[in-house]
Amino acid sequence: MSVRPIVQIGDPVLRQRASVVAPEEIASPKIQSLVKDLIDTMRHANGAGLAAPQIGVPLQVCVIEVKDNPRYPYKPRIPLTVLVNPTIEALGEERFDNYEGCLSVPNLRGIVSRAVEIRLCALNERGELVDQVVRGLSAGTFAHECDHLHGTLFVDRVEDRSTLCTWDMFEAHYRDAFVERVEALVARFGS
Ligand code: ZN
Image (cartoon, rainbow, N blue to C red; front, side, top):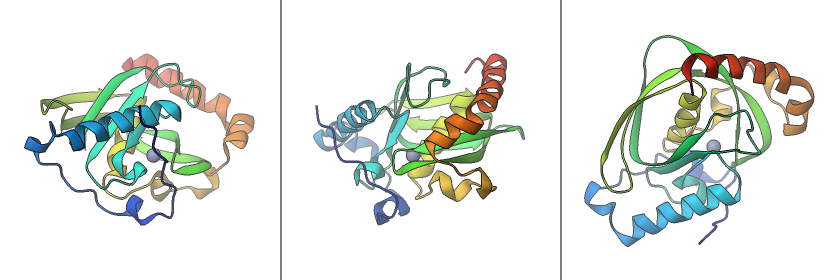
């Protein structure tokens, strides 16, 4: 197990476009140990996802997993998913105001508008094609991680900056209304 330090906002690696991984390299020890480190570091930090630039590696690899997450107790479960070279495309016009946070942006949350249905294409850790539709709140989780691979942080996507808040202020003032909206969304989409 190898828990790596998480890079914080201001480090240029979070702002560069990560490089595509050649499919034949996915099985290499370098990429396989990167995937293991991402999983270990994500779980150690109670993240819902982690992208390679967040541990200082500018490659298009990210991992996502949600199960009983103390940082995001309202998030529906997502089984462990490894994505290499992911692309996402919004399906339809409907969007959801998601209160996001990020392990690379300490103690800050804010509202980001995310598509509620996306098509996700990627390779997994075995080099197999992933082509799936992700709906509901989980679509925002995938979009957040894919943004990291293109040098974008959630704060770049916060349109109404008056929604920016610390985690304590989120709990005190915004959590209840947000969780109500999340539950309605999850009830519709099942995720
Ligand atoms: Zn993040």
